[in-house]
Image (cartoon, rainbow over all chains, first blue to last red; front, side):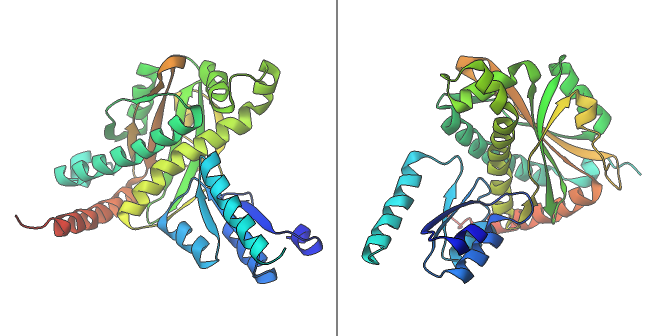
Length: 87
Length: 215
């Protein structure tokens, strides 16, 4: 969160299951800080509630095990959006 | 007071639970296959509701040597523990399968703990998330913890269940054929959680029956 505050971060890949606060909680703070930040929540926990909360935050949900195809798809879309914004 | 299995779940509920577990474990096997990029073979899942002592015996009948388990607590309408268990002597082989075969042994050893935790996390979450979704409930999962020891330690983790001596023990053999790796998934719950699960299963059965159109 501090890093995102101090530097220009375009993309955040967050694990859902982390020590202390979970990835969705961090994503909510990041979103409050930057409404344009491109966020992906990565988790093997694909419960409807978790996926739904990620979407409510405007984040992409990537299921573990993360494969090249799904990561590339997210990054390609992120790149497209960043270009469209002129970033 | 110890309740017998038949007093907790009737035949239909047990069938429904077995079906949920089948689907959950299939999902977990798919995740494992994706991680190791090799065929993963599953045995027909065996679901028994037994006391902890019997659960220990069941595992000891199959595995005589030291074991490794990845342990996660789940909490929600039902509370319990999920364990992914396999022989300790196979743990490095499992890590090698997951991280790729070209790494030198010292790197594999260094990665072992973290790789085991993450592998367990993916397999157990794959299974439990699928079950939770079908029961239309959510479960909070703890961080994975790697345990080493023998069956009695895994089935008597502190704190013990507050009530009842009946636990659900699901076991399923999974094997990565080309690597001679085998393991088990066990879910443990105490009596209050089994009672809550019974209600959720009844709701699931009702929904399933309602979704079948008359011919």
